[in-house]
Amino acid sequence: MSPAREAISFQDATPPFFIGVDVGGTSIKFGLVDDTGRTVRTAKITTHQERGADDAVSRIAAAVDKLLAEAGATMDNVTRIGLGTPGTMDVPAGMLLDPPNLPAWNDFPIRDRLSDSCEKEVTFLNDGAAAAFGEFWIGSGRALSSLIMLTLGTGVGGGIILDDLSIDGEHSHGAECGHVIIDSSPDARVCSCGQPGHLEAYASATGVTKRLRERLDGASSSSLHARIDAGEPPSTLMLAEEAEAGDEFSRQLIWETAEYLSIAVTTLVHTIDPAGVILGGAMDFGGHGASTGREFLARIRKGFRRRTFPVLAEHVIVDFASLGGDAGYIGAAGAARATSRQHLAAG
Ligand SMILES: [Zn+2]
Image (cartoon, rainbow, N blue to C red; front, side, top):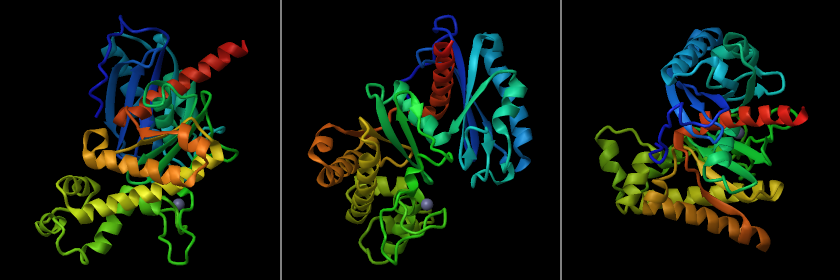
């Protein structure tokens, strides 16, 4: 996932320290992170969303204590905790509202409950914003002063960071990049949120797999047939592997996905004008390590450059993320660090 990053010992790390917590629908990932973004230790627990949010908060607090003990540290060494969760949420109020992946956690004051359990201040943010902050701090965006991040997974997550600040918007829906409209035609695909024409309906792993299923019958020569007929469920990983092996149908589906993304990237860049757009998440078709992944990225860049202003075509960087599944907890810790520094600056 992130072979480039090695854990550093607590003694060799640079204080102050921050804990990042990344809550997902299936697992919760933690890390003790130092002032330079290096990870001292990580841990992971199962979300068990069905047991409710109170149960999860107690288990998070216990897991954080265990993590600190294993690292040879205590909560006294931690300046602040960062907590990223899926939306919908009310960031200023510290509330989860109606998160589709955590249906048993509706209307829950998760920030303050975690703060009470750990006896530590908590910075609360959207999981897409947390991933963006991680890439901004020490990942692909580390040289950039502003970025938009799209996380391509089951859905399409978004994060916008401008000068150390996550753009949450007035109603905590400020970086819902997966829900920009890319198709206004009457037969547009319907998004998981129920609205037609949104990017997520076309370029999430769910959307791509759905397009694959719909079109496979018309592509009798595709090498996907053998695997699906053998009982393997279609996935974007299978698509990436068959594309890499030369299957033309798989390749075309991926290039179309790149085209959809380039439309959304153009709209987002025209709204924010960031230094860069970073593409993260599991659906990278092999990323920089595969010719399919490189071509996928090249086509997004090309589609964007064709549609944008010359200055933006020349200067806006479009690249893959580099932190993999660690971006969320690292970014949550980084956001906690940014909050504590703002407090220091405010005196
Ligand atoms: Zn939507």
